[in-house]
Amino acid sequence: MHRHALPLRTPVLVAAAALTATVVLTTPPPAAADDAATYEPAGKSVDGGASAGDATGLEAGDWKDTIGLTGTAEGQRWYTVKRTVDGSTVRFAAAVPSGAPTAKHKVTVEAFAGNTSCGKGDSSSAGGGHQPIVVASAAAGAGDSDECVDGDAITFSVTREVSEGSEEQTDETLEIRVVEEPTAKDAEQLPTKSADLPEKKPSLSDPEELPAGGVSFDEAVSLDPGAYEGTISPGETQIYRVDLDWGQSLDTVAQFAPVTAAQATAFDGEDVQTSLVTYAPSRAVATDSISYTYGRLNEYSSPELRSTTPFVLYNARENSYGTATAVSSAGPYYVVVAAPPVEEGSGAAGADLGFTLGVAVNGEVSGTPDLGDQAAVIGPDLDGGSSGWLTWVLVGLGVLLVLAGVAAVLIARRRAAGARAEATPYGGYTPPDAPQDYPQPYGGQQAPYSPPPASRGERPGDGW
Image 1 (cartoon, helix red, strand yellow):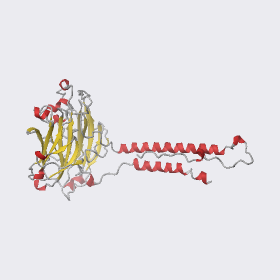
Image 2 (tube, one colour; image 1 turned 120 degrees about the horizontal axis):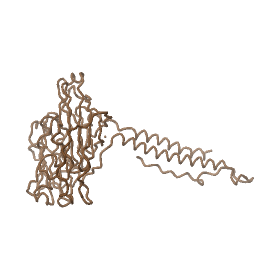
Image 3 (cartoon, helix red, strand yellow; image 1 turned 180 degrees about the horizontal axis):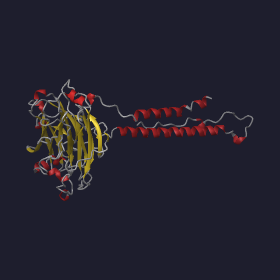
């Protein structure tokens, strides 16, 4: 009896394993705690140089450093990037968390080829609203001087400027993205202008549930065009990604729900400054002039925010001003919905602010450059990001099917072995001295078993 009892355990254990795997993998990850919903910088750690002469060498990719207080030696960092493709466009974006709710920070990035300035960009959380991330970017390449186009290396400085609220500054994590965009073989044949952006806004009709967004660019949750309904609390950041091809534009609208009477009482007249900002694959701000990305939510106002990118044109990189120069490469575009933290003890803390998000991709795929065997963007992995809870469900179902298949095979083999065991040996005739035991399955050996693989309204400042 023992020879039959022991093999029977295998299918039971496999079925139990399948059930366990299903419970673990098809259950969405737990909701982030309040203190985990704020923006989180990501990248490999690096120490920037204190001057151009000792600039730290970086390759294209994502990096993290620490930048000190305004006016100190640590308040400016220097880096240098060597080109891997002749004549390429090198982009550098620096981001810091915006900090305390009343702080107004400003960061400037400037690009150099030797002693020649290739341009600079700055950004600030000062003005009509709040963004969870203060981003500044600069680039060197097409449309610049010969030194900036042909130089073997480009040096970048990141400077924390004097601004209102500086007394609230602390050392901050500096998030850096470096990308290199190769030169197209057919650049002169590609379009230099696009059609006007459509005035019609994305539809907000028939919204489906909005998945929880990521808290970093790396964890951005993929969205398809459509309407979504969700909530956000003061202090939270939700990051999504939408892939754009050449010739396309991303248009997003966030309509916030009116504040309830209970919330208005709790807020005690305090505004919540909501924001909706779009970033390019390089992490540079990518909002067009028709955008109004900040609004004040209170008992009298429920803002509708809009963030629209220009059409993706290869030759836009030659523009000398504006965000169009950042929208010159196909790839993931990041939509950041945020509500700033409120003062400690505020009745607005922890409030669920409802909103509907509309997402539209406009334009036909066109103007695709001939880049040879080069990727459109060299450096960081642009295929990252999360598709939210659906990924977990699909992975769980896949594991369940694999395990169920293994269990079915083992059960079938067991039954076949049993059938052979029940048949009388020797073709139905049993010699008197023949053994009476049934033959063991698989020639007396245990069947082989290999476990299956185990399987988130105001425009930006002119500096943007």
